[in-house]
Image 1 (cartoon, one colour):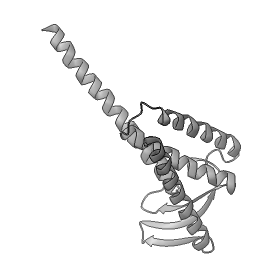
Image 2 (tube, rainbow, N blue to C red):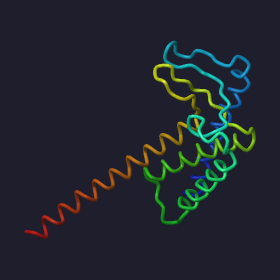
Image 3 (cartoon, rainbow, N blue to C red):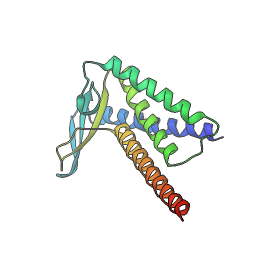
Length: 164
């Protein structure tokens, strides 16, 4: 059941990303940009042929293959029978979903549709899939650091008990 729910979650997040991109293409592409929160955020249609911040734009095929390999590796890891739903698990589902959303764009369109443009900071235009990957990665890093600190504290307490 957990495996099925994992695949359904990935599908829902990926479909949400693709539907948002279709909406952006239909409504925003003709006008290019639209103010959302004046001075803070705008919708801005961008065709990104690269990765983060447009990097690797001349290596789209390598980027796509690497993304596909990472998605498959994480999916295999998540599908192991001993995996339990945890912060790690949820973060990996987010990373797969975002990666898959942008991978679909690269294969289907030849570029990734970006549309969220923060105006309050000099930053790249991004999309929902990028948010999934970024939030999933930060969540995973937080979870890993928390685990390292917990292990360190436990080791310190067990060393104290051994010394006494």
